[in-house]
Amino acid sequence: MGWASAIFGIGGGSLTVPFLTWRSLPMQQAVATSSACGFPIAVASALSFIVLGWDETHLPPHSLGFVYLPALLGIALTSMFFARFGARLAHKLSPRLLKRLFAALLFCVGLSFLL
Image (cartoon, rainbow, N blue to C red; front, top):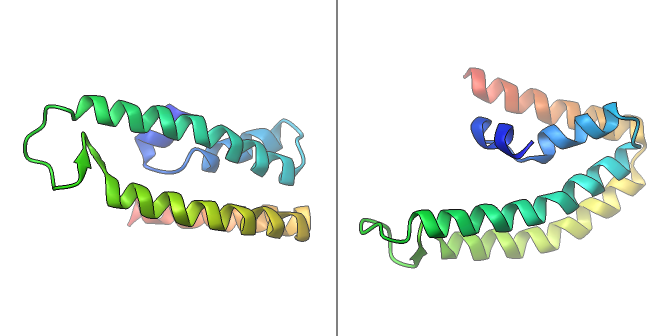
């Protein structure tokens, strides 16, 4: 899942959630499991980008390898806030509506690839 999502430039959850629901996991559990898997994948990826870009000289200030620290901080802070919001929302929505919303998201991602 990580390899394919990196190739397409999308989050791993975009592929993990459909796979888990195909394997008969309820939608809420598929989203939660995908989110839990995303953290160690993100840490491993960030460490790889730090190591691979360590000796690069033409990077913007406040970079650690290929990781731009202000962006890392912004993404981490907003993710911590919105993860709680998303989890609450996922449990309030019906599984059918959640699947439809996720399908709409995937449609938008696919459309952005075509354009």
